[in-house]
Image 1: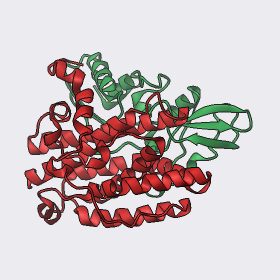
Image 2 (image 1 turned 120 degrees about the horizontal axis):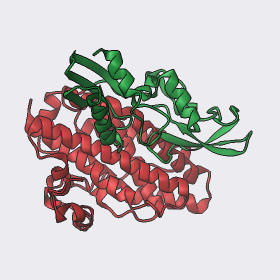
Image 3 (image 1 turned 30 degrees about the vertical axis):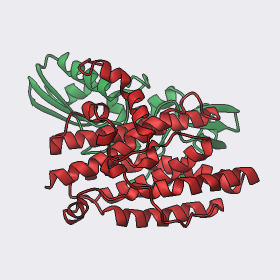
Length: 160
Length: 251
C-alpha cells in the first residue's frame, strides 16, 4: 500500500455538490499517511467552515480507503492546513469548467481583493466581459455572474 | 490555560453567531430579491459553521458539552449572546444594517484572533478570514447602494436603521467575566480594543455611503451576563423544537 494507491482511490470520491470533481482534485485532502498496509490516516479540511457536505465526504473517503482492504482507517477533519482555492489541482479546475463553473484564479492569500470577482472568464464563451451579480450562490463556494458577450448567467467558484 | 475564560469567550462569540444565523435564515424564501434571499441564507450557513466550530473548540479544550447540546439545550438565561442579534429581523433596512455592523465586528474579532495564544482558535481564525471578506463586501455594497446611490427614502431609512441599531451594536462589546484573564493570556485583545478597531472600520467603510455614524455612546448591555430581551426565548423555542423532541436522535 502506498500513498499513491490511496490517492488513486480518493480520485473516485466525488464532491456531492459538484459531482464532476473528486475530493482530491478539490484540494481538501491535506494529508495521507500510510502507516502500514492495514492502517491508513487521512486528513481533510472543509472548503468553508460551515460546509454541510463535509460529513458525507468524510464517510465516503473512509469507505473508499476501506475498499482497498484496509481495516484501520482514520479520517480527521481539521483546519491545520486551511483550504483555499489555490489548492485545486489542474484536473480540478478542468472538472469545474465541465460542470459549467468558472474556476477561480490563483491569488496571493495575503492580498486577496474581491475585484477578482469582476470580469471572471465566462465558462461558456470565454469572454471576460462579465459582471458579478452576487458573491453568494447556490452553495457556499459559488458566486453568481452574467456574461455580456453570450448573454448567459453563470456561476463561479469563488476564490477563498 | 484559563479554560473558564476561554469558554466564556467562546460562548459569547458562538452564541452571537448561532442566534444571528437563525435570524438571517428567517429571510430564506422571503428576501426582497432572489439574490438577497440566497445571500442571507448563505451568510446564515457560514455563521452556523463558525458557531459549530467554536462550540467544538470549547468541547475539546474546556470540557463543555457537545456542540449540538451546547447549541440546542440552553434556555435564554444561559445564553451569552448580545441583545443585538436577538432582535427580530424587522424591515430589510434593519437586517442589512445589523449584517453590516455585526460583520465588521466579526471581521475585527477574527482578524485579531489569528494571533491568539490558543492555537485551535488561531487556526480557525485564519480559515474564517477568507469567508468574511465576502460578507463584508456584500454588506458594504448595500450600505453604499442604498445610502448614496438610492433615493431620499432609501437614505433616510438606512440612516434611521443605523440610529436604531447603534446602542445594540455597542452592546456587542459588553465585557465578559474574565476580560483581564483573556487579555493577559493573549487569548484575545479584549472588548475595548475590539470596539475601537470596529469603530474605525465602520467609519471607513461607511464613508462612501454618505450615512452618518451615530454619535451616541449608550450601549445596550446585559446579554453577556445572561439578561436578554423578550425576543430571545421564543426564538430559541422555535429553533430547538425539533431537536428537543428527541435529543438522542441520530441525524
